Length: 430
Image (cartoon, rainbow, N blue to C red; front, side, top):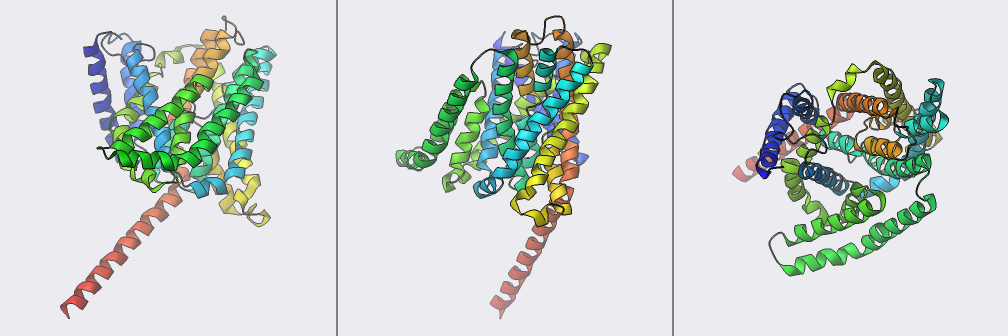
């Protein structure tokens, strides 16, 4: 692969991502949808043979460089999302996140398992198909919630931690489905991972940042903080093939420090200016529209899509509802509880990279036999496409009241400041 064409692809992807972002936002929809659609256009230029993958290296596995840049994009996105997290809100919503995670995983798993058995698939293959429906695409949900300004809300904090827990459960379930690997060994690795990144990191990060300050070099704190993020990501990638969990933990322990919050703009500039748009364009390019040509895949996809959406909304939403967000029984039947729980459920709809990873593991482990593999690949791509495209507008609809209140609050604050300024000017003139 010639470097010139990789550079060309990066340039085209960034330009079209921002153009798509701007166009979609004019229709009052989250801009990330524009980046995904531009990715779909670029990817399908290759899939339909209009442009050679030699010249447009945007599709999966056509360029290791683009695949890696996309991975860096979601690493930065999760790091940025964790930095922007309110730690006190995360603690407050811990029970809600845990209960909704468990139900949000097992409701679509069980529904998918039984539905596929009713369609004639063997139990093991049906179970593997159900596992594909369990893990939420945390990247898309975080991006949309950040763009809408609701990530620091109770629902935002709970959705973030629930999606991270989703990944660990999804890894365990696919190991169980395939029958390879040790669940005990995985449990030990998860425990050690949280000890290293969570407990030790939480208490040692203050000294680490102070050391960075003493260096007195330009962007020294940023450099050392990003280095820590990559080390955490490397540990998570080597143990779980999930680098985003490491970057999330790094962002979370830094979120408690003032220095961590000060780094937000620098990290945002790198992420939103370069890597994050590459990730979403690359994600959009995975969605090959040729999969809609297969009738059997469409039938399977229709079943998986309905269960993927309904199962997650009911599972995670019901889990959030029964906990009443820690406010007690009086809040259980309040309309506000239902609305927040619905928001939580909608935030769990999208599936992308984790579903594909689970699918490949299931195929290579023969939980899904070679004869059915093409059908499952096509069906998975279809339900991923649908889930990715419907989530941004649904999230905006679900949070419309919160967004309006935020806008009104900002407008009111601005008016008050103008009044205070005018009053001071009058006093000074006197």
